[in-house]
Image (cartoon, rainbow, N blue to C red; front, side, top):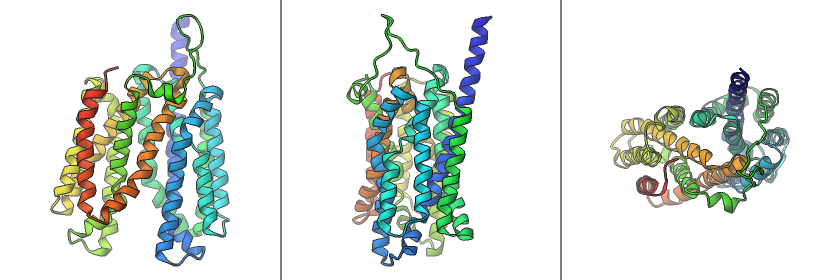
Length: 403
């Protein structure tokens, strides 16, 4: 009877924690993207008139946050393993609130860059929410738990820019940053009130608590580094479209005034279908060997990337986009889930921090390299993506072992 009661209590705790992390992730990612598309306009409002300078300041300010956050994620993850994941997420959200309030009152472009640098320095939010989801999840529901968090992370950016544009139009650019701060406060309240920190009870066979692993030790876990590579390349190829897609669409004869609409539709399709892939992963993953599942999912993304290379018109992109999104979403969630199963409970924070570093590296490098390739050939970006994904499919099949 006590066993049944304890089981029911653990299930209730997991469901409540899962709800808290999923909702907080969605709200947080919405707040993050609520103001980012407004930065070029904000720089102009601060007196930067040259378009080249606006682009430079915007690129630096957008790119510095994931770049620094990727470096810091394992550090915050290790602290989370030592002091608790919930306090580290609360710390991150409080920093986000302070940074956005400060951004509403800046007077010079360098101040925005400095605040965005600070945002990245004290972040670690994304990897910590994954670690929080994994910490309280039953092992047989890990794919579901991670998939829900990733789905929330993807869906937030589909709403943030729309809300941000509307708020800026009605109340002004500066007030949009204050609204973003309020959004983060809501996420903070969700975590504080709903999430219950699960204590680490892991013990080794001799009765001692599991040793907390360092970053090099995590990377030496069987197959873990291969999963980092999978996440890096998937993130790289997905983010590579941002700098060049509007230009690539123009070659199909789309009217200039319609290019933003078509670009937005394609990006939204990729985001929404990616979220669907995150959600569906738990249903399909158990029916396949892990290396086959990830390999075939990546192969689906390869086919979509190849269709983009040979696309004769915009309709092909509308067909290829959801294939790419679903396939990438399936493979990404499978990789995170496989890593979660391999990580000791005592080192989930640092482990997911390492995975986040791989993801952030892809996010930071992709716009730079694809933009540089785009100056020579727009098609080269899609060709490189196709080759990289095809190689990744073979790599996953050979280097990722079953759980």
